[in-house]
Structure formats: C-alpha cells, structure tokens
Image (cartoon, rainbow, N blue to C red; front, top):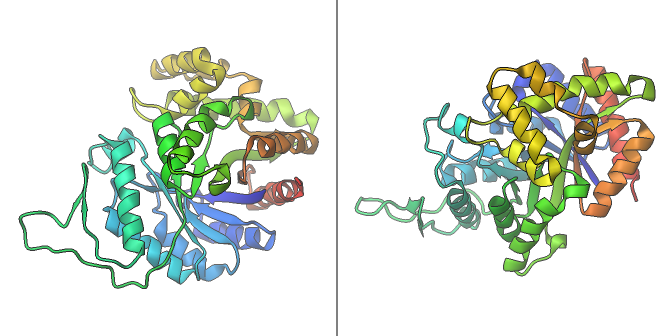
Length: 345
C-alpha cells in the first residue's frame, strides 16, 4: 500500500506546514493532499510545495465544485501538472450546502450532475481540443452570444482525477468516471456500503477495482495501552461534531456514512443532541468501537492488524492524519505510520 497525508493551510503557521511536507517526503511519503474547506485554497500551496519537493505526488484534496468553473479547474490542474513535472493529482468534491451556499453563494442543487459534467469538461480540456459542451448544468460556449469553442493554450496533459464521495450515487459515479476514490469514515467490516456502489459504477464503464486507486483516510495516533483510553476519550468529541455538527441541519454526509455502516441509531441520536445544543450528551453517545473502527488509533500491533484489514478489503492508499500537539509529535506519528503502511506486504 502507498502512504499519503493531507495538510490544510489554516491548520498552522506556513513555515511549520512546509517543514512538515518536506520532511514527510524525506520519510518516504508517497502522496501529499492539500485540503480546501472554508480556509486556505488548495492550488496556491500546491504550487509552492511543487517547488519545495522533488519526488512525491501532490494532490488537491479537494477542489470544491461550485467555487470555480470546470474550465478554470482544468486550467489549474494543467498548470500544476506542468509546474510539478507531472506529479499532480486532481481531487474534486461536491462539498455541502453550508459551504457552497452559505459561503460562496452558489446553489448546491444537482451535485451529481454537476460532478459528472465537470469531469467530462475537465477531461476534454486536458486533451488540448476545442471545448464544446451541452449539458444540464453547463453549456460551453453560451448560446446566442458571440462566443465560439476555444482550446486552452496550455500543452495537453493527462491528470488523474480523484473524487471525494460518500453517498451511493456519487460513489457509483466515482467508479464510472474517476481514476481514484478519496474516502473517509471507512470501516472495513462495513465496506460493502462503499464498494457496492463503486463496483456498480466500475462495471458500467467496463472496469474493475484494479482500475481505481482506493485512497482511505484516518487519524493515526500510535500510543501505548496505558494512554489508549485517554486518547479515545478526546477523539469522541471530534466524532460527535462530525456526526452532529458538520454540514447543514438537513444534510450531513458523515452522519449518513456512519448510518450505512451499522450505526444508524446512535448517529441519529448524536445528531439530535448536537443540534439541540447538548454537546456533552452527544459526545457521551460515541463508543470506543466507533472511534477505533474508523481511525488508526492504538498500539503498533493494533494498527498493523487494522492496516491488514484495510488492505484485504481493497484499500490501495492510506491517507494518514497524524495526531500530535507539536510538529515533532506529528512527524513522529507520520514516520511510524509510513513504516507500518509500507510494511504491509
């Protein structure tokens, strides 16, 4: 399996972030994804990191649909591919209504058709041919005006496209169109909730699982048994926020994902208490098993066993979110995680 990580521009001072990425490459990291939520954008640091690194792949994890036109996304991807010497991976995600509508003022309606059409337009732009598209969400060029089909002046380049997906329909689309899947909230024992739709989409396009890079992410925190209970307790509040506070009052993809993997009742209860303002009550509902199942928290032996389960289920790339109160602590967790991932035969 390959080892990856994700950084976020708003997570700390830029010098520390850059040092983290440069050291991660030296440690043998295969891929560094750069997140884009409601803080720093992804392309700006990716261009900077392309100049600071030499070997590992760099990806947008993810560029959010609705924040740019499909052709602007293609321009960004092609530019970063050339800047990095072919090391760029384009990660796309629909995000959610809270960010897309609440922050960007763009309607969230039709994320599935928007994603499908965006991928098709982006791939067309990569070829260097003139771009002409007519769909449900996008029409290029606009009819009735003075515009005519144009091609980008950039040198054509192929850029792998990864989709961040949790819902069944978006998972199907990922299997049908994408080169890779960026997943989260993953439980090997409940992986059918993900792989069923993915395989349906793969079959639709005449492909198999071997044609898709399955990239799963989880927090990694290697601790001894004496500290395990303490670490699990601190992680429960974060999971309660994901299940109860992420998204909007009507849309929470993380809650839906946990529900499909066997925790429907507790996920609903956590959300109800969180939305009512009872944060402590919501956190108290989170069990140790819920944290352990979807993270890489525990002793090295526990994590080695867990990573083998990920591999046997079909995970190709493990995206590590190293815990730690300092840069040194995070790098230590990452270094040990990389060694564990690469050591799984």
